[in-house]
Length: 386
Image (cartoon, rainbow, N blue to C red; front, side, top):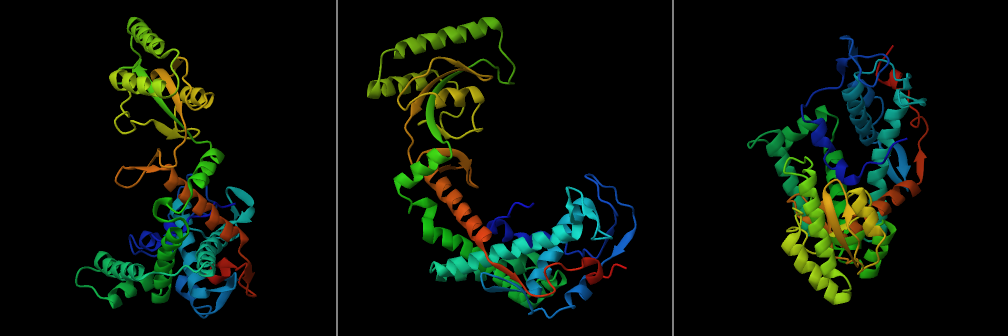
């Protein structure tokens, strides 16, 4: 029903809710939400303060692999998930209405399920990281302290205090304990990755990276490209296109009969002299890619080759390609980039996706035990809807 959200995303959720520091208690209502709903202009008064006070904030709602989730934490996720839902569909005046995308669920059931999933992610990480001996370092603790100072400056101002910050957070049902817990779990998420896979995946063996690459359909290839489109992407005329094809046929003829290192050297020379691929400077050793990342004709032609094998001339919507399949390298640059625009290498991508699989495994395998009365709350009654 719901794709699990990564812990890394959860780390930013508090600020997302606080972007306006507003309340979800009053909003325009729509009794039966549509895909693109129009609000009625009516006001729905949801008693979030009263709902939070219905139980002791330290009361255990459920355990995740034995780790207790308190009412204060679970309530925050209910509130957060409601703000996300109402931001899309409008305010809810009846949580028992069937969910628009799956009538087997009510709106309230969907919100409760999502709230549970958020809590499970944090606690499954906490339990499994501890079982693996992962602990925060002094640098991690310093970063958490710096984050607190940064949040004070951003949300309160340069002259703000911790008390000022948590007064704001409390308006959105984030206690000091919950704030600290979420930030520590976000730091633990990164620390567990580094401990298990190393920075950038450097604890993975070459064999592990290549096994991952083969499982995910990665391949590497160089190409010489002669464009059959102009700078605006429009097709060039037939005469110019024929000249490009004749030139590519001549290039192909120069490589005929060559194999191994001789082919590689000759191909590189001709690629540098002739290729019109604007990505050549960034990827001089070719592209490492998987399904859907390159134009179909290129991908299919490359997949049909063995490493070290040269293709015939391939035509795509971009132009004419001559492709040389390359062996996979664990440190090849892929078509995914960090915040500076630098491409990741295959090793880093392997580590990230393997870690994601591991986290999702922890989540799906988690033993969830609800305390009586909490598993299926009556949100209408809890929030004061008559």
